[in-house]
Length: 272
Image (tube, rainbow, N blue to C red; front, side, top):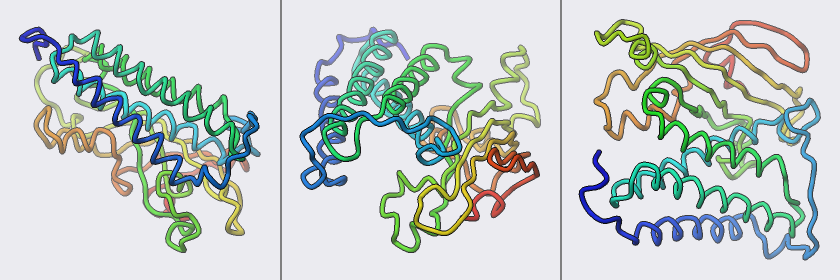
């Protein structure tokens, strides 16, 4: 897209700020800031991805994934409003990155407490979204996606927010066949276009609500690259770039707490 056909429309800033403001206000209402406000700032060490960490670290990848999506959405907003590629990347990164810091600072004045780990992964997610946008060949080759089936906690109404229902989620850094083919200079479509390989991570049993063993699981997965079935720039192709269909892959996984290794797919992954 040629972003220099007309002057940048400053209303793009208003849209971006409105979205980010709505996220802060909506979050404050949804997470009951009025009831959980302490007025005293506190920072909590959540333990990164350790065995006894908060959610086994799955929430950190959730932060990175969410902020990567926010960045790409805002970049698209700036791009279609006439901003140059670099300017779109700058504002698309800066506004959600700043917003992520503000949210954590507000958390610091509640009994949730602020998390430096969350701030870092918000920044990493925004940085990844902007970097891949500025490097189209790489953007077509790798991406971060999210897979989800509601956990038993969510189905039993113990967990009411699907975005933090980590017991039903998995985040994957994917390498897809189309991008790899093009990076090697092969323009003719190949059967491998319909495949993608990824490094996946998820945790189970960390909600504390059910009597289950805590699991931190990392795996090498292979599955269907649904992007290959749809035209470039189509909305459905974009959807499949960022959402991994739960039963469309299999992989070799290691459970880090017990060191057990095995092949998993379907209910073997989403069995909590």
